[in-house]
Length: 438
Image 1 (cartoon, rainbow, N blue to C red):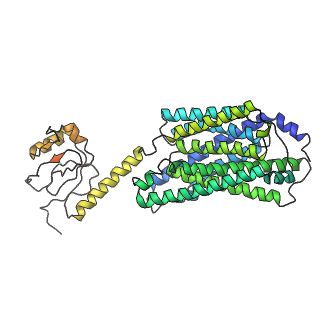
Image 2 (cartoon, rainbow, N blue to C red):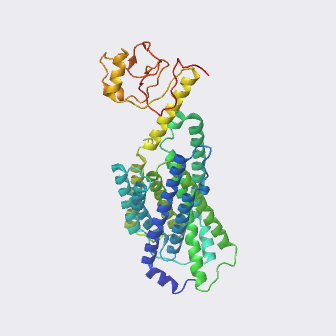
Image 3 (tube, rainbow, N blue to C red):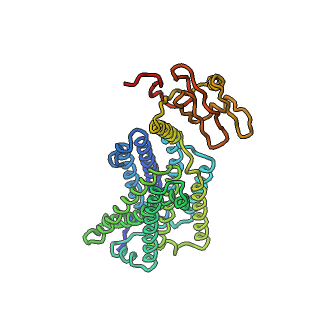
């Protein structure tokens, strides 16, 4: 049984579906970046033991509501146009992703990001132009019959195996990173694949949620026409599968945003989501069978351009430290040096970093020459660039370096042993060797 006049009305209002899809994509992208911002603020403002789960973070919940709202708009849009047209239009969120990630998250947008994003957008446009645009209407019996098609069985098996392999590989990479470290040879093999695995899993589950959502939209259209389709178990099984895939999509996307940059995670997610959604719609609704040879060739070209853009985005430097991470690393280094001195019963203090002239004057007063490998004197500017100069028990800086800077033996210091030393960090204590012990 068909949909009657409703099919013609839905085809005539395809532009409404386009508008709803664009608005939904922007809402979804804003929500995703708010979730990333929540993770950043949580990591900056709380210690490891006090960190909250993402469901307990208010900003993350707001982002989740925006993601859900965008998904609802996408679901409504599926009732006005075919899946092959709705999914590529959702790729317009790439532009919003660049804006939100740069303005809200302060993530650097490089030339490579611009080229990769442009390639992805170009591929999406080509795919959208040559995709099938005719809409169809199905009953629950017809949808179940489509699920039993041999080609769809192959597609479902391929997606299931891909999800299982990605899940196992992700767990292995997380275990290796936790126990071996980021610089270990075991993890180095997966360094390029690790940031791709999370958005890939999220995109695969998201594509299946679109497929189930399109089926639900078709059932609702048929029900509105007077033929109730919700009298059997089939529609409820489809609805349960859709909600499960939506949850898995949000779950894996949240893990990806928690570990890597949104400028990288969101484009990769969009690529997997759009490509697999189009492929799944073509297999399930047999949209590829209606395409001409030219349309199919251009469709394949658009998919290739999209994948090229993702490869370009994947080459961005994921290991480059942000200012917050650099500050965190410097703080950890200071704590390590202070604890090392304390373990060796060294009485030392930390002062603010002096100017280059004060540094040079200090070394001249204590007759401590610093020479490089080529026996050339070190300028005050070079001394000032030293990251950490721990203070020894006598007040003189104990400079150590793996390069070519080697200090001479420290001479004794007159007075109470407390001097203007060269080191960085906060002032913790001032204690001299001559002070009476309590």
